[in-house]
Image: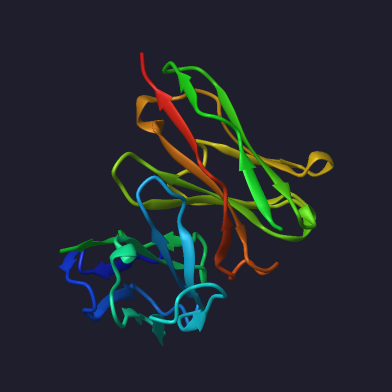
Length: 107
Length: 121
């Protein structure tokens, strides 16, 4: 089973700050890595697919990069509405797995 | 428009059985993988397993193999997650998810609203 390790677990950030969340896979998954945003009491929402591909309707301040074992999610100018927990998910190998999540708090 | 509508919250006792559902709208049900994801209170997302309704090909995470059963009824475009004997540790929110495209390597593009299962004596 592929283990995904996210960093950091928690971050307190101010609006307009740039945020970088990393996700490291225990073995190579090519580009089969996706990012989700989950706000309190809501279902997760797909933000980025296949490492770096954007999703229609997602603000352009969200971007992704990486392949193989190391991936990043970047929020280039944080807004208050981005307070949420972010998860990476690998679909390259069964069983699919999720990272443990990164909680972003807005100061 | 793709929609996944899950059944309502459940409160059960340990040892009871349960089957929760996920009804799909707005696409060809037999052409896309549907999976289930668990989220225990205050915790992260856990991938449980997935089914391809077209031929009922089902794959489980080792963590959930033997603990739950995933099934689908093509005639009513509905996927199911069931337990034969619930434990208190099954208390969680359960989400059904549909993959974005027909490939198993695609992301979970669509999510249901979640079904809260509470198991308590």
